Length: 138
Image (cartoon, rainbow, N blue to C red; front, side, top):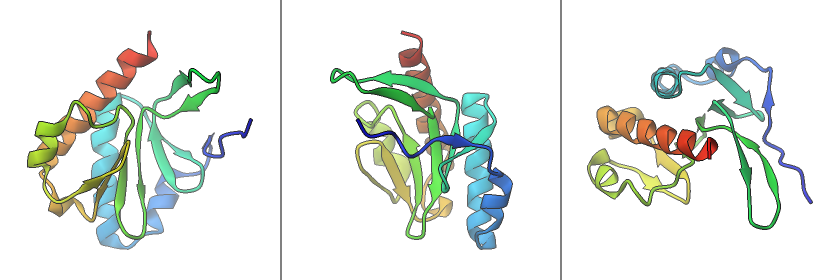
């Protein structure tokens, strides 16, 4: 079975963020604070390009299991990618009023924070963290 490549490490979150242009740094620090408040956890680097908060253990029906962060983000070239690991099934009404974005199974893609309603984004992140925390304790 293949091992998960994205693992928590001791790399500096601040040094990673400082490598981006000033406007991207501003968005990163805002998201960082939002996720810190939602998780009550300090950020950690996962792999070389993801900032994650908290951790949970998962186990699939296939028997595969591992550990991953509860929520996190990555400042990719095209988008800010936010990991909403609970998925989006329960959040349709929030997504409708969020602003300019796209999604995949558990990723929310935005170009910049100015494109979305940050209050709605905070609510989405907080609800996802609560769902993941509840899932983690079962």
